[in-house]
Length: 555
Image 1: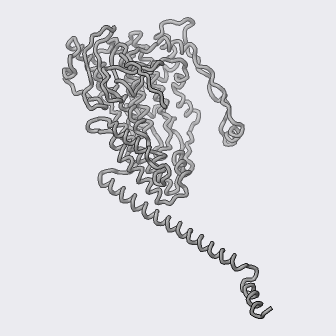
Image 2: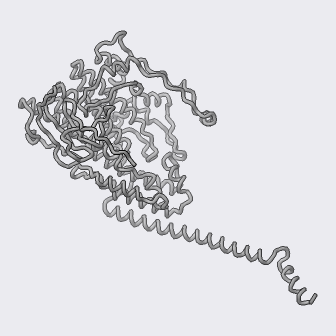
């Protein structure tokens, strides 16, 4: 072998013992690529962080220059002296006597037994089976005989909870009882051996709550203001157990008012109606949407008793004037508007918690799960788009000056959300937290309309008491009247003696479809009103219905 050739073969091995030259070259290239990619990722993070921060700061400064203050604390209700605060009555105060652990987002009752008792106040009413609906919007009185039968039967024992064995072991390991024996048995309602008059039997059954109802009625007079001690610092994770307690109490007072009307105890019925209004207003100052929704859904329950008292013409002039004044002060659209802004700013607060790696409450865990790996600039971009969405749609859905609902904005938002990219990194928080206005807005419009109709009905009855007849036009009432929040126009009214017993006039608004259907509603076969069709009507006989049209089958 030639010396030169031998030298060529031996030199590489001498330079890099144990490593083939091609493999070493590939390794260098791979390391260079990894280093470049890492540098690119770092550069991307830096650029995204800078871009996101600049964009968010510029957007926020522009909002603040226009008078928008993105501070959730501005929506927290001012404190109320305890001696004037209805929420501090002994029956209700334990609901919020809890310790909040910000690190873990947990709430521990100071006295678990009192807390549970407060949560279950009036809850047995919800366990009743086969109870009739409050159906005054279709011109129907409540079937007290059906309630009488429900009280006599009581509730069925709850079905035993079946848990996966691993879940059961996990819960018990953490001190959570899975024993059904912790749940109280169904209440046995007092009732006579044989059914008597439905109203009297209902009053006897509701007597189990006599002490609690008397205490709340007394507290409402002694403590005329109300602010529940919600842990607002927990933002959107704050528990609100009082909503269910108030909802159940409103049902209890309204049912008792209906029974009092049937036994001709008008003063007692009026007192219970006043309590129903008071309890509904207890949620009016709260900046959370679910509180305002509970308020909006509870008001029509109270109106059942108002409607029945008007139907049988039992309210006197003073009572009518008091009810009218109560109804005039109800602004559900304003409460809805404030709650949207409050929730917007509380969501911004949740983002700040995540950004600062502070407490992870129940709500913001969902955001962390899908965004922990993202640059902080993406947080800023998400926050910007979320707030842009609120300014574009939620800010416009209610016109406070004209007190109208702009349903076209909800349609516009629905289309926008449908076309929004699900994969774009800047859209994730908006997709998670933005509420569709087409779902959350109509309950407020419906309940505000119903409150307006009840108010005008009181004025019509006062006119009849003064002048002996109903006016031919609403303008003759000589009182400022609310307009239909769906149309912005005056409510529709006609004096209609008609063939139906008790039919005196017809008063209605156009409802969600914003069409005048002549004071008719659409009923399903099960008797429920289709809220997307027909009008919202106030009359004292069964409301005429729209014909059922066969819907075309979807292909």
